[in-house]
Length: 601
Image (tube, rainbow, N blue to C red; front, side, top):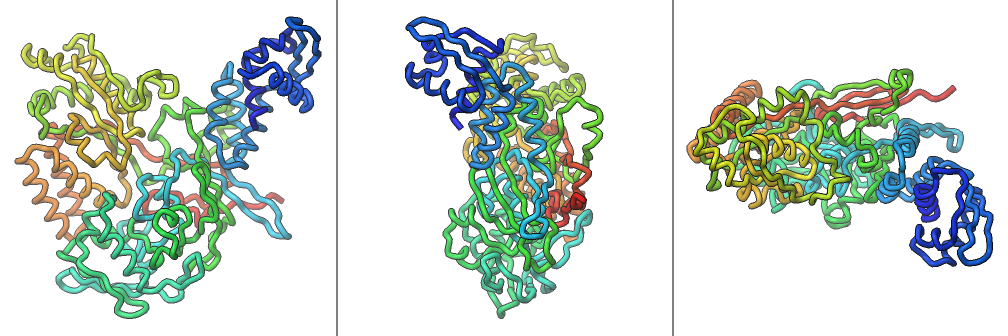
């Protein structure tokens, strides 16, 4: 593997000509090694047939080096070996580092596109269908309790099942692991009747004890997880018999049943199959249509679980490989046009015939980016006129720049600025953007720095905001923090907070969670009204009326300039027409259980 990288380095230095006159001194300098090691590397490359080496003896005498192979071939060969070793981050970085033009990167990317997608092979007289997927986010855990990323939720949703689920494209909640349920008149006692003989991946049958363990684990955790407010409303959970579970809530909540549809409430085995929480996250056992057979930092392999209670999936195997998109900057600059998962990444070929071979499908899910203002912190944002000015500046810039938010101010991979702290010094005319401020406020904004907080995934949006506000005379500092720290004290130390809302069929749960969080840093008189509406939402059985209440909260926050919506983009999946059965589940994910592709005749 190292020899491939040394060849790419050598070609990047001397590959302008097929034949070059060179000394061992120069080779040793290029490889940063001794004369002996440099000669050893050259000899090995010659034995591989990559170069021809005509040596001239004597110190300082120039030998002849002839390149016999193109760097693209070596890069692709290196990539093949890397993927087999399940570790591709370093290889992609080095390929880009050694590339003198876009040709090498494009060749490697074209090879990757060929590697991913549907593949069939005959094994022991049967066709084995494998789908290889590139994924943008690295998967750290698929444990429903600990996962934080969309990619983790996607994988987890195929490994685990919940008691109930939402039907695709509707808000109807239908049976899943529970074939039926009952609720008392007070809407506080929920009784679920479990399907019989549902099997976990490790071979044991699911019982009421597994369901009890799952919800006890959720309600007792200190983990700052999404929808924690629902889990904390569980008063008790107990098994009435082997196939019946009763969950008692502290108070009625019409969001409880929708919560059970989420991947967070997926059923795990009692005691986590004796694996411990950390190990269970990478070696899980669920009841889902696929079981995990391999997981590393860049690779995850799922195998069909034939005894699944809803029937066998069509695919035999799914390989999910984390691809760091910095090898393809043109793709990186479009952060939310595609979901974290695609059947196939959008092809960059300029060939119209090749582009015509791809199909696209929008999921029913969109991502909304927004900015909130921390009015609990002393400073500029206590003034509603300043907040109004910021929102109007951002809105004007958005309208006039026609999509600027999908293009970054600086390239992450080439910028010498810190990834976690990025500061803009203002030199622009403070009235460059409308509306104008009075002289006193202009002095205020020119002498006060605004701290813009976000997570690494949304750093480009935060930089766009900082750049826009710079032109209006503001001083801005962008700080990014990991997701798990985002809800901590760092929020209260910031002025503007950039985040997103995934608008899927869990939207009402997400909105409830969002507005509970926003209540911590908006003005006190607004908090009372938000909390009153949230209480009404919890008790409202009609989802359409709940939607109206949520809209009231949004309108109030926008009108008071405590919330500003930047933009909204749909998730998009690109795939080959040979892939059939592309549908979305209630979470907006492509449902792997229905994917199939016809055999080659």
